[in-house]
Image 1 (cartoon, rainbow, N blue to C red):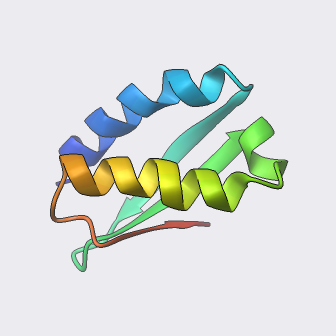
Image 2: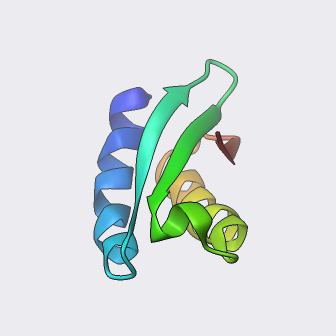
Image 3: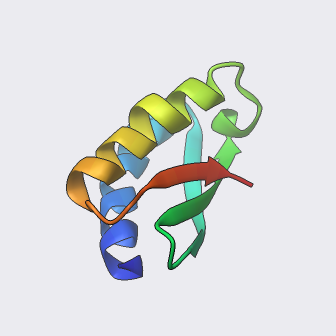
Length: 73
């Protein structure tokens, strides 16, 4: 599952980079919880939780059904 998550994150990164941010994969748990770190502008943006849940998590769940939740660490 980690490889699938990494592939989807690579598709998402250009969208984040357009606003000066990025995302790093920290861990993919057996329980379907994906841990990421938002970096650059995304790391300190007031909208980062919205980006995380409505953007990254939504896309990951669509592309990788085993993903249950995405959390920022």
